[in-house]
Length: 185
Image 1 (cartoon, rainbow, N blue to C red):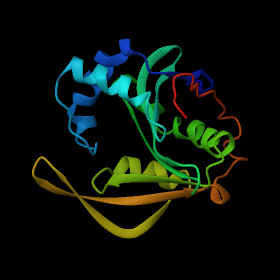
Image 2: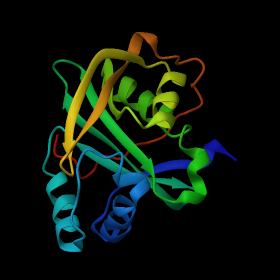
Image 3: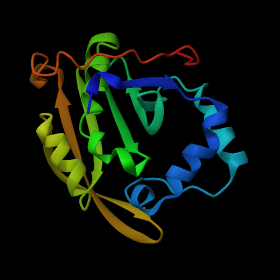
């Protein structure tokens, strides 16, 4: 596995079907905060609408130029210098890369956007993601939250990674461009 082969590109309308298929998989949708309808039309609209948002942006994750997943930054607040984010590996053949993707985004967020705090909202039963976050230096906030999903109460936690606690030295080779040509900042 060559982590230097991980790259990111802006999402295009032509990605709508692939993203929708990923988002509809149980292994992904079970850990997402939103449920979506199985509609290419709505998926395309979601992509187009996302270009208009100032506090959100997303990319396709590539490995050896093959589309393998999705990554986004959400609730960007440049005054408070904080954001949240999410990601998933849509192509199950590349699950092993899941823990290698986030450091690229962290380095970009801390250096390019000058953000000081990155939050992650994670369902309590998403053990693998919680462990990946801890490995990268996240701290778990004490409060447990509830999210209604499919008429069930789902518990989740907030985790925080601060710029001052990020190990730039350890992850210095995790550099990539996150193009933002379509983003309305």
